[in-house]
Structures are given as C-alpha cells and as structure tokens.
Length: 114
Length: 113
Image 1 (cartoon, helix red, strand yellow):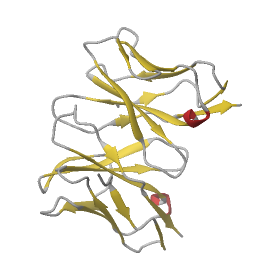
Image 2: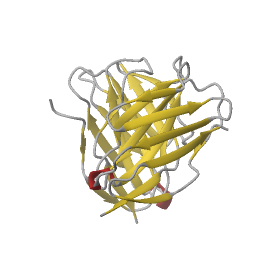
Image 3: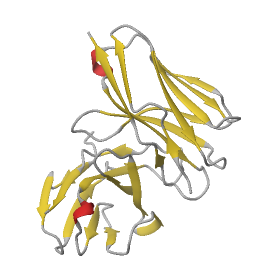
C-alpha cells in the first residue's frame, strides 16, 4: 500500500512570493492534516480537511490556506511568503474523523524562503 | 495556551540498555496521547498511543505510561537498538472535536554502539 506522498520535495521561493504544496493521502483516507515543522521546533498544527471541508485550523495567519479535492488530495498555499515560513511542511492522512484514527505522515516538503 | 513539552531535548544510551523519554502536558482536557518517532529525512511514524482511561500500555519493546495526576507521559524503549536513534515526539489530542495533535518539542535519542 502506498503511503502519503508530498510534492515537491524541496521548494525555494523568495520573500513575497506564493508557494503551493501538494499532498496525496493513503487510498481510502478522507482526512488530511497539514503541520509546520520549523527547525528545532516541534510540529505545529496548520489545517485539517475532511470530505472536502476545512474542519479545524491552527494559529496561523490567513495567508496560510488550502483545500481538499474530490479525490481527497490536498493543497497548502502560502501567500506573501516571509523568511520565517521556511520549514518542513508535513501532510498526514487518516481514515476518518475520530481522534483514534492514526495519522500517517508523508516525508514532507522543505520550503526555503530567501 | 496548550503546550506539550519534553524535559530532555537529547538523550544518549548504550545499545542494549533501556531508555526513558519524558513528556509533560498542560491541557488537562486532553484524553488521547501518542508517541511518534521521526528519523532523519522522514515524516513522523506512529509508535504507540494511550487513552486517558489507561495508565499503561505496552507494545513491542515500548511501553507508554500516563500519570494524569501530574500530567506526565513517558515512553520506555527496552533493549535499544541502533535503529531506535531518532527524534521522539509526544502529542496530545482530544477525542471529541478538534482532531488536531499538539506536539512537544521532541527528544533526540542517540544509541551508542
């Protein structure tokens, strides 16, 4: 069974630009989660999508947004990039909406803002 | 606000020894806790979880202990192996509603040969 996949692996942008990160969940999983992992820090919850709807959002500014497509894949968009947005962005998927459903993580997209 | 923290950022143990990684959480409403392992260049991998109605749960070479009185969580790894070298994160969640995981900072575990 294929795991969670993310693209691109690395992304380099300059300040003020926009970044788009993509995630494909495990087949059959309907929930997708996005986390930010800045260097030396733990994972910070960004967004949770399930069945195409945004279910919850972390303490991030509105320039962090996303969506989930009918095939359950997801995009994370970051507008007006700032230097501190440089981080590893991790996507996870789970079977359903119960907290007991294990979240499976992808390898992440390393975003560097210059 | 909510926070989940770790007492020790780094831990080194000899191969074959047991290791204990600790975690403190502050949200008494959390009722579900998970330990993740993250190897270099990879996403976090689920190790073991525990619900708040339990105080101990065992897996293969791993045991999680939960002390709700002092809001403390620990991960014990028995007979450590080189492959156990990684960063370990604890995370907390609530069964009802939010679904988000609140992660601790992480502890880097190094297994010395």
